[in-house]
Amino acid sequence: MSKDYLSVGKIVGVHGIKGDIKVLLYNDEERRAWKVVYTMYGGRFLDHSVVANRPHKGVMLFRLSDIRSRGEAQELVGGEFYLRREECGPLRKGEYYYFELKGMRVRTEHGRCLGTVEGVFATGGNDVYEIHGPYGEILLPAIKDVILSVNREKEEMVVHLLEGLMEE
Image (cartoon, rainbow, N blue to C red; front, side, top):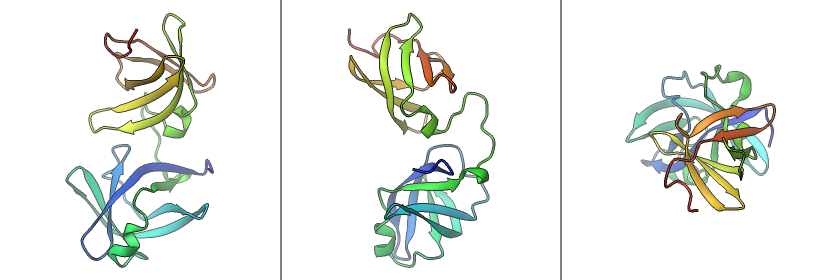
């Protein structure tokens, strides 16, 4: 995958008969002035001009200029929704792109290795980091009481395990 493109959401469904798609955005991007978005097809990024978009029941609905039917839209479901990196605004303190977190080593503040970040899930309230390692799968809420630090250069995350987050 090219680091020139950033995944900003997942295409989770279709809406109506004109080919609108439902996108679950990973960040608070609703107010963005959407002009062009990208999807991946056959290992290539395809660009789509945005005709219209609006919030709808926890997702964003998008009408793309080249998608004209429900069937065409259905082919995109399950795929990622991308922007070119230079089109993304600066991140606020404590925000990270998903690709920066994936594969990052995770340890507790006491030095115990928990594994690596294998996935990031948007839940609405906060993201959840999926960690795989010697203790199996651990799901960590991305909240300040749990995620103590993220070091991009060292590709390491330090966490505090709240009671109940991991079986002993």
